[in-house]
Image (cartoon, rainbow, N blue to C red):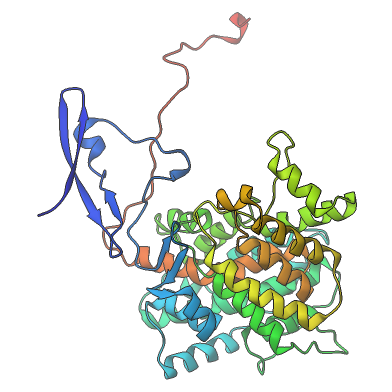
Length: 429
């Protein structure tokens, strides 16, 4: 028997269907609420509103669970790699060997950008924010690949997907080179995805960057763990833009712009800025933690706690181990990393943070790893965008394949003036 919830308003009672997800999640279907009652719901920030039914990513924030297509993130981190995980998210299952080979070959073949892109990069100021360049260039890709603006069939979609996932790292690397005044470095078809990206970032015409295996594994891990995270701000943006039947390039470019916000993709930047502030101010980690516990200080411990996870962020546990390996490889002491380690130790052993379940999150460790690799802070959010690209594509595809999907059009509760007459300018006081 189908379950329902009863809504009572005045003398009206209506039955609303209760939808159950595959993991037992329950949601009240209010899609007919306005038609039947004239009412809408008000939920600023959409914290209690399900915008879609999705089969891609499952999160249980209370238990610290994250799964891609049903597979625990811990298993993927241990056994998979970013590109295989990208296929899993987008196409709904792990690839067969021939599919993985074909997709990898497509990524290699599509790593380069059309030579005319050089002129577009030259048009940006040297100090242009890399995320601004990224958003512009993702949209620009549509101009060079107009055959994929209307995606018909699996073959065309896979090809468009390969181009986006491959070229986004080239755009990112070129953005860094442009803003650093360095010559652009072409992709190397002999290198795998992450190693090729770091080659384009750090190689010089006279000296190629050779990526240590530990660095390659760690960055693979960062990208894999960021590949999707359910209906967050940027993913919801991709879906909202995609609901208008906007093409894939425009939709992911919009997601990239949403990610630029400091409350979303800029969280790991905030961690490094906090560490730098502590170092410059000569504040001890102990004193900073004391300030963070004082509600009147205005000080926050960045990189701790998460809006969704009310327990330890499962991605943070994985990245903590990866960060240990990267730092061990470098050997050299970094004052910011030393501060981060001390903050982590203090918070994990302080009942104030433990009782409030304010554990280190993925942004805390990803920032440490990327700094150790040599990626500048202004590129952190760009790295997030590279990792999140498969999730954006998967979400766009899922929505695109829904035959009865509707354009997103939220309602509002109007709080402005009531009926007001126009006053001629001569009579205004």
